[in-house]
Image 1 (cartoon, rainbow, N blue to C red):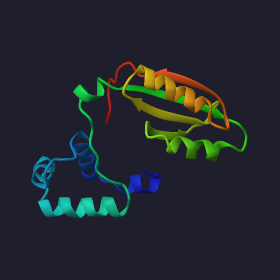
Image 2: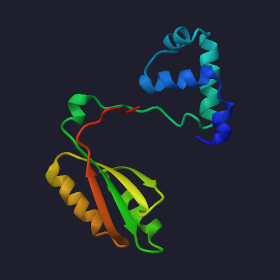
Image 3: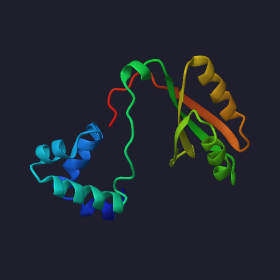
Image 4: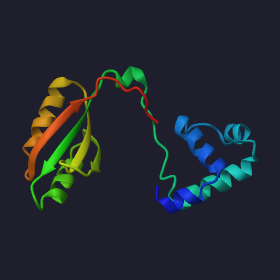
Length: 149
């Protein structure tokens, strides 16, 4: 969210976004009751937030029973000069890569990975290290998620 979009949000918008982050399946009536405003105002606010691209979509948050069976890791990647874009495109083609973030500092990219076990995670990390343009990687396996919004 840009600073401009952030500055246009009033307290009700911010509370609405917080409620949607907690549970995007809440009904319009539930949101209206929680915020103390009409259902029509909820529809209007959601339409504006979507139009301004503050809200880009609605998604599913996976439950603990499923995520406990998954292996997740962050891989910091240092790219060779002029290979940054090619590495990002190669990472984007890997279905186990959940997100890619450009970062500042010694490394250029962080890729968030998710696989069905340690063997497949190990293979994926090896595959990433072999991508053309990858100079080096550092991986941190996620042991537990303490908070996710």
